Length: 137
Ligand code: NI
Image 1 (tube, rainbow, N blue to C red):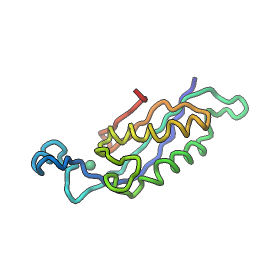
Image 2 (cartoon, protein in one colour):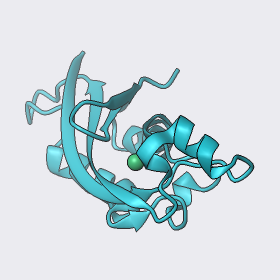
Image 3 (cartoon, rainbow, N blue to C red):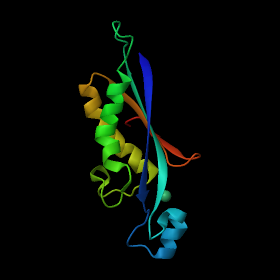
Image 4 (tube, rainbow, N blue to C red):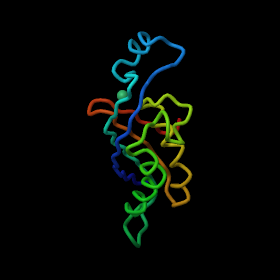
């Protein structure tokens, strides 16, 4: 079993807030990410797949193909978008790094399986210092 990772980047806007909470409580829990007038982050997405090496190509999956799937299913829908308002796979979710990471897993698992490899992990960096990682459980 071998693991290979493709890195992609996107930027997106969000706001972390609960409408039933006061602005003060939202600020206390979510900090700057609760700004009512939105803000953005430059995200880094790392998608790791696993499987056996194809002896003819030496590849687990052609990384061009992996990149194409990530761009079609994720990047084209989220890059330069507002996650609270216009990203279908984030609908109804608080756009935290954790929720985003799980939502990306759910979007990619099936299409990658169809392409013959198994999704191992999704890692999303919101800042240089903060990232979330999901292994499907
Ligand atoms: Ni934020």
